[in-house]
Image 1 (cartoon, helix red, strand yellow):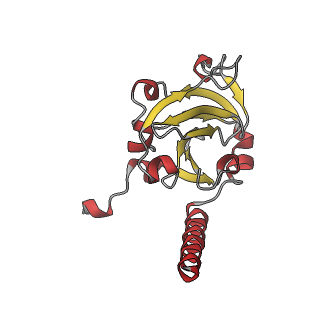
Image 2 (image 1 turned 90 degrees about the vertical axis):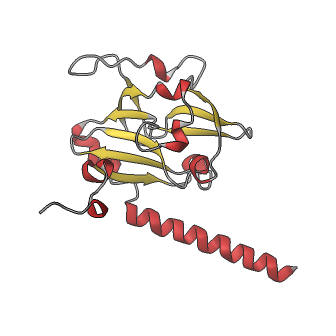
Image 3 (image 1 turned 180 degrees about the vertical axis):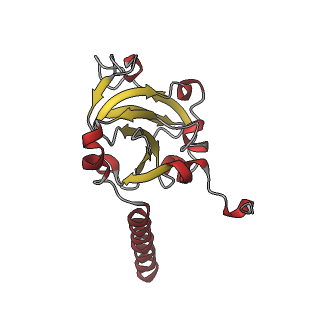
Length: 184
């Protein structure tokens, strides 16, 4: 008997495990998500509660030139061993996102490994970042060393831990709003 459509998991839910980084670069709410595939490839995305997604910000530019000498688009992984790929650390910037309201966000790698792909589709279609962050709007694909996958992925929050953080944020915001109402 086939499962009902309402019970069917999405492609992402079936083949990936989510890990979350909260308050990226020390900025409250700027959360990112790492999708760990069963083959240990990591897809770097923004989390659903990141201001770009949550506020429906219009992305006007995505710049992969992270320093005067380093452009992430120059990472060209070729062959079985992915020669030419940039080695990258968890706190290394992948890109700078500029929104139409002038706000800028730095998106980091979140995992140590080889940068095997940057989603250059985001240059011509930056709206994918907030419209489809886990699919067509992903930022990058990282290939960690197999023996280091757990070392770095286990430092990320699970979905349950992330949801608990979100609840705490909502409670603290509600508490702040309630206090300001009392002071009026």
